[in-house]
Length: 78
Image (cartoon, rainbow, N blue to C red):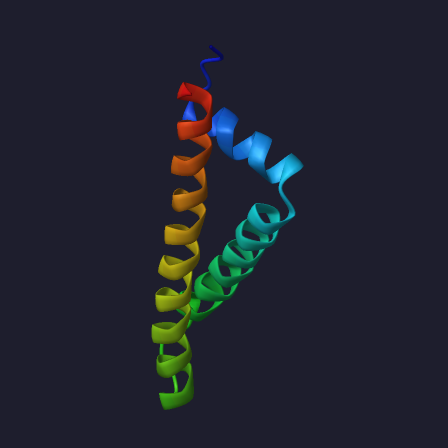
């Protein structure tokens, strides 16, 4: 049985699974935009809403990625 840590699993999924790669890339894109918004001293109402939506979307993507990681770990233990 192969023993991989979580970072190795993420790297393997990123390199071999297009869906995981898309999720991770989209998450990184949201993170970059989030950092842009957080640098501002004052946000407009639209930016506040965008900030809220980005945080929500990031969590959804993270949940999907961790579900894929859990499923991958199951296949390793079988």
